[in-house]
Each structure stands twice: as structure tokens, then as C-alpha cells.
Length: 327
Figure 1 (cartoon, rainbow, N blue to C red):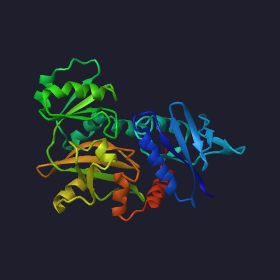
Figure 2: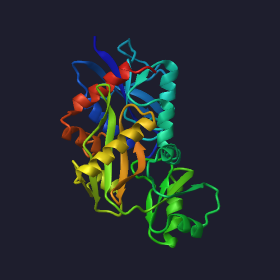
Figure 3: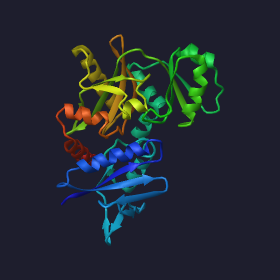
Figure 4: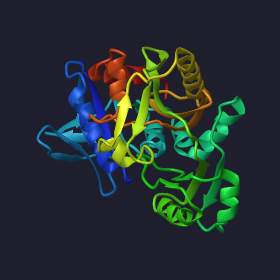
């Protein structure tokens, strides 16, 4: 009997449109001979399942079911394609845990931990994982620009602590650019992370559970036309994404070891895509995305293809791994 799969998409953050695109790619490539797949829009004003004709059916939040033609559809598993809140920060996954519904992401605690950039970095640092020098601000804190520059130098990056797709991120080259960048970041989150500029190649690495093992995908070198790998670079073609990355065998081994170590330190399962900057031939970990983009412009599908894994295989594996995992 085919399993019923809910592909959740949308969410409550600035990444809603990207998530809807990712979710539709998953829906189009989910093996139809094995699964009855339904798109489920998780939006601020409604939770609805969609049929092939875009008809909407209200989700019963008591058990995450819905009715179509008087038949109650109960899901066996959820494929999480929500970038940001409430999918990537673990909020909705805690709800699934309560009702006993399996899903393709890590546990809600791991998701919340990795979504919080500051907390994520604090966990990996004691294991010898190299990171950028950083400075923290919370909304309402007094901003001392001279203190920030003394700690992280110039240029520096100002980031929302909890946000994705490079929303709210700025590169400040001068003291005068720091305050406007902070205000921009506060539009996305009440906590801010300010980091030193690491001058080196940017490598992004997908790691996930594949057939029961932790698999490191072929790495991608990012060459952005813009100041950094921002929204335009990620989604509007303003970058070169070179897979596999043009790196030495020695550096490849270092990155593979570090990426796998970070994934396991954080007790991850499901998909991840982590960012690294190479300084003096050493990987420096920036952050981890636990619901990476799955659109035609996204990196994980590129890396999977380079590994000889098709999108239907990739998504089927995610479902099968989730069904085997204990909640």
C-alpha cells in the first residue's frame, strides 16, 4: 500500500516564496508509484492541503489530517520543505513529535539549535572546529561601533541570528556602514551576529543520511558576482556554483572530515548544507542550513546530481530514512 506523504511548504518568514518553489519541486519528483503525495501550505492565515487542481482542504490540527470526498487522509510521514519559521527552527516539528508523526528533518531541538547561528557555533567550537571571530547584539543593546571594529575588524558581516537565504545580511566596509546594516538585520530578527571577514574561497557542502549512512555530497565552490553570496547570488544567477569544487585532494579530505564531524557533533539527521571559508588551507565553519533549497537554482540538487543521485532517489531516500527513524 502506498504511503501518504505531506510535503509542507510556505512558512511564516521572508523565505515563504522560496519554500513554495522547493516544495513544488519535491512534489513533482516524489515517486508516484510508492507514495500518495500532497502539498500542504503552512501559512500564517491557513493550513491547507492541495490537490492536483489546486483545490484547498483545511488541515485538522488535532491530528494533521484532512478530508477529501468524505475520505479522511492520514499522513504516514511529512517531508519538510519549510525554510525558516516554523519548519527550519523546529517549531512545527515539536508539534509533529507530540502527535507521533514522522518527518524528514532532525529532531526539533537539533533544528532549533542549528537555526540559531550563535548557539550552533558555540556547540562546535569546543571540538576544535574553526570559526570566524564574532560579536553579538540583541535589540535594545547599546551599539558601540568602535568596540565592534576592535573585536571583528573591517570589513565585517552583520547577520540576523535566525534567518536564511541571506535576508538581512550586509557587508560593512566602513564604520559608517555598520549602524545601517544593524538596522537592516533587526528587520529580520531581534538578535544579531557580527563576524569578521574571512578572506578565502567559499565552499558549501551537503551532508545527509543516505541509506543509513552519513554521506558527504560533492562540494560546491561559490564565486559570487556580488560582495558575497547574497539573495541575488543564490537565486537570481549572480554567482558561479562550481561542482565539484576546484580544490586540492588534501583540502577535500579536510573539508569532508570537518563537514561530517560537524553534522555528527550537532546530532543531525536529514538534509543539511553547511558553509565554509578556506583561510590558510583550513576550513572555517560559518553556518548550517537544515532545510536547504530544493529549487532548480539550489545547490543540493546540483550536488546530488554530481553524486549520481536523481531527485526522485533523493526524496525517496529522505522518506524511507524518516520512516525508519524513531520519533
